[in-house]
Length: 93
Length: 407
Image (cartoon, rainbow over all chains, first blue to last red):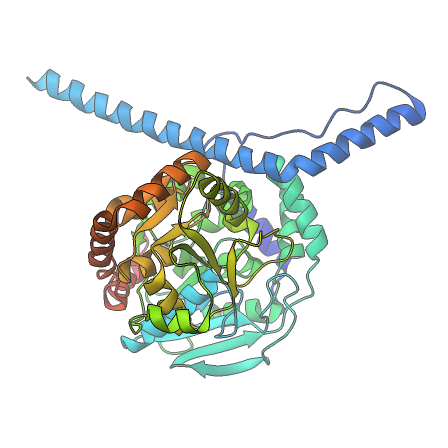
C-alpha cells in the first residue's frame, strides 16, 4: 500500500466541512489606486503595507465580531424555541 | 480499553498547555487501568518541528509513545497565510497550503494510523474492533484542531475519532478545515462549558455528542511564603501572574493596567513568573522571575495577595485552579468567557474589563483581607472537585460515546 497523500486527506476534510453556520465576515484586499504609473503603484503598495501592518489587530476584531454574531444567533434561536414552547402551552390552556 | 491519542508534540520537555494537558490525561487514564498509545512527532519546537526525540516507540509512565519524523514546515509562509486567511477565510487551496506549511506533516504517522485502522476495522454492529488490543485503538483522540497531525489524521480515523478542540476565539476557528475536523468527529471533548458553547456556535456541531471532560490537578505540597522571600526579592505585597510572559497572553495590557493602578496610589506590586518571550518591554518596577520550579510556584502562590489572569484567550485556566487550590483570590479579564465562567462558577475572585476596572477591583481586593480569604476559600472548595479520578470518569463517558455504534 502507498503512503497516504496529505493533499487528498485535506481535500477529504474540506469536503466533510460542509457550509459554515453563517457566511463568514471578511475584509478584502485594498482596491488598487486609480492613478497610473509609479505614483499609482506606490499608493497601491502603501495601502497593502498599511493593511499588512494592522492585520493582526483587524483579525482579532473580526474574530470578536464573529463570536458576537454567533452568540447572538444562538440566543435568537433559544428565544424562538422558548416562544414556541410558551405558545404551545398557551394553546393547551 | 485501548485508546490512541494523536498530538503534535509530547514529552516532559515540551512547553505548551495543550501538550501538557494531553500528557497528564494520558498518564491519568493509564493509572486508571486504560491502555493508551500516543502517536506523536519527534519535535519539541512548535514552529520548526526540528527533531528532538528519536523516532521509535518508548514508554512514559506506562503510556506507549510512538514518535514519527516530520516534513520540514515553512513557518514564514504559514504566518503569511494565517494573516491573509484571518481576514478572508474559506479559500480551500490556501487553507490546505497553510496546513502543510504550518505542519507538522508526518507521512509515517499517517501510514501507521491507516495500517491500524485497516488491520482492525470497526465492527458495524458494535462500534468496536475485530481484535481489540494494544495495536487496535477502540477510539482515537485528536488533540487540538489546529495542527496537521489532527487535520490529516481525521479522514483516516473518523470512524472512531474524538476531537479535543482546546478552542478559543481565534481566526483559525473559522477555517473550513476546522469545520472538517470537528464535524467529522464521533464525539467531542471539551475543557469547560464556555469552550463547548464556542465550538457549537461558531463551528456548528449538530448532533455530535460532547462531554466537558476538563482536567485534574496533580497534588502539590503547600507553598511556603517565607522560603521564597529568602531566595528572591519580592514586593512586600503583590499581585502574581503565572505563565508565559508574552503579549499574546495579555501581559502587555496587564503591565499598562497595573502601571495606572500604581500611579493612582495602588499598593500592590506586580510579579511576573514564567519564561519571557522576546520583544516585551517590561518596566523596572515589575519583578520578573524567569522560569520557576514547581516548589517556587507553590511558594509564590503562598506569598501573593492576588493572582491575575489577563489572557483573553483560554480554553481552560489551570492557573486559576492552582490559585484557588492555594486559597488565593483571582482577578481575571472578563473578555475571556472561559475565565469569566470559571470565576462565576467558583466564586473564587473578581473580574475586570479594562484598566479602570482593573484598578478598582485590585484596590478592593488589596484593602479587604476578609474578602480575599472568602474568595480564596470558595475557590479552594471549587478546585477540590478537579481530580483526575473525576476527569477519567468523564473521559470514559466520551470514549463510550465515540465507540458506540453509529446511529
